[in-house]
Image (cartoon, rainbow, N blue to C red):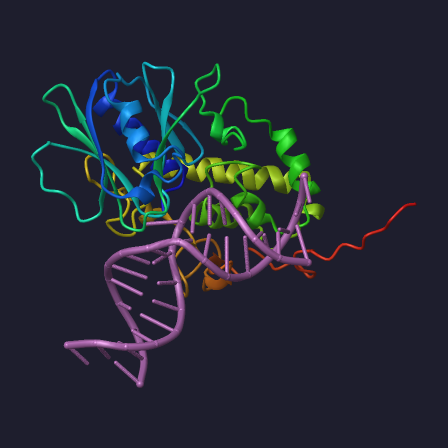
Length: 294
DNA sequence: CTATGAACCTGACAGC
DNA sequence: TGCTGTCAGGTTCATA
């Protein structure tokens, strides 16, 4: 569930809850939650214990905490992951996966994850403190070094639909199913519009729309449809009230009044306005004639 | 290298 | 009361 705004809310909460504190004990309650830490759960624990943590970082939907050792502990929330700060004597959550206790008497950090698509791992970092395993990720639209020209060039080189491109974390990171649909609605584009023939002005419009809608969502504490997305204090956001299309099948478009439609998309859903976002005549291209030059 | 779809999990809910 | 099928905010891996 969590996309960039929700992960950023968690990053901020994480930082105020644990930055500067010393890790004392770590317990892994489910091996799957540390599966991306190749050396295993015991090694994961060993690398954390005794470390003081620094200021939390984020790229796209990933976040991390630097350790005094120079390594970083990285996390991804997947579809249902939560990082919560609670008093050490609070009862264990149903889906408690990893528990991090500190040397002081303050709250402990818990990774709770119903579906276990998320996870934690300890990684090496580059000179800028970015985990090495995240370098394949594109920067996100809030990164001062995000290169819009390069984004447009790379998108137009693709032979796919614009929604697929928005969700490709190697082109731009942080955008998921909700904010992709919201951005496409704001830009007046249907998600199956072929990227190869996308005008530069449209590519930039949808990118800026994604950045804008995610900034607004961040201001509302994120989008919570249910209890699966919460901040470190266990509270949800309220941006779902401001969504224009996502989850609004049959309800009137806020711009023109036409009923919002839901269409299947990659085993999931896309929501759009049939009037404001007209379908392309020829859908996403995928058969490209290959010409061999000998 | 690029594009696509299945797999990875658990739980809520609708319909029978 | 069950059972079955569908759906959920994401990423990775195998296959063309």
